[in-house]
Every structure is written in structure tokens, then in C-alpha cells.
Image (tube, rainbow, N blue to C red; front, top):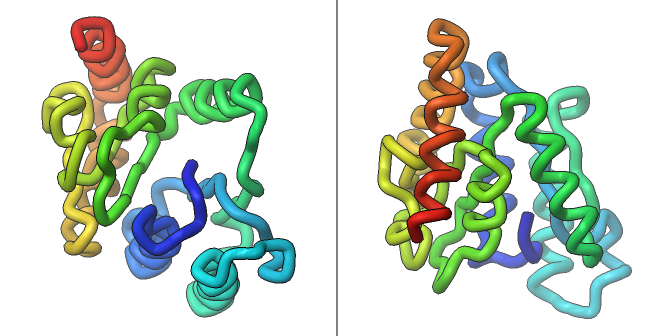
Length: 176
């Protein structure tokens, strides 16, 4: 859930997902950001990212495993999106190349979502790696996508794992 620009790396996340068969076999991907039609944007970088998203969807044949929801401006609706993902025992991924603060990380963790977030900037201070969420390296796509896949594999064999991370995320946000 972010702007559709290079630094937010949402197209990078789509590519990580598309390339990782193990991850694709475990979960679907939902992206919230930008427009679907590049002509609706007035920003050249965003237009390029929208076009790139369409190329990646086709390249990795993501139809049926991927949902792209246009950027939301209603904060109540955003909260519902986080809760919907939490209700289905999903996770939140913030793959930014750099994130100064990490409001979406706080929002996701506040909804009890296990959160994977960039180790570049603010989220690295919010998340206690492996306890209240997970640090990911946005420049190492294989390592990052495998870390996400390993989490969901562990959830399949240990029915308490998702809940343990969820509770730890809520506890961390309340302490923070």
C-alpha cells in the first residue's frame, strides 16, 4: 500500500513474487497503489511504473494469483483493507528501497498483520526482526521473497506461528 513510484518498489515486489514459485504456491499477492491506466497519472515516474506493472503481470502470468487495487484516499477503507488481509491470515510487505518513517508499517502492525518491511530506514527501528515482524533487504529479491515464503510455510506446519507474530506486532506497536 503505497504510491506507485520507484522508491516504494511495488513493482519490485511484484517481480519478487512472480519469480518465486514457492511463494506463489503458498499465497496470492494484493497490491494497493497507483492507477491501472497510465494516462490517468500526471507523473512520468508513476506512468512508467504502471506500465512496468502491466508488463510484469503478463510476463509472470499472474492472473488468478494477483489483485491490484487502485490507491485509496479513504483512511477508513485503508483500515478495512488491512483488516481483511489479517482476517485471511495474510501478511503486509513494505519493500521500499528506502522509507524514512513507515506509517503503513505501523498501520499494518496495529491491525495485527505480520509485517515484512525494508531494512532501509524507519521500519528497521519499528520491527524487531523475527519477533514482531521481519526485516527484508529490498536489494536482495531472492532472500526477501524466500523469507516471506518461509514464514508462510512455517504457518502451514505450526498453526500458532501466524498468531504469535500477530500478537508480537500488536505488543510492539503498543510499546513503541
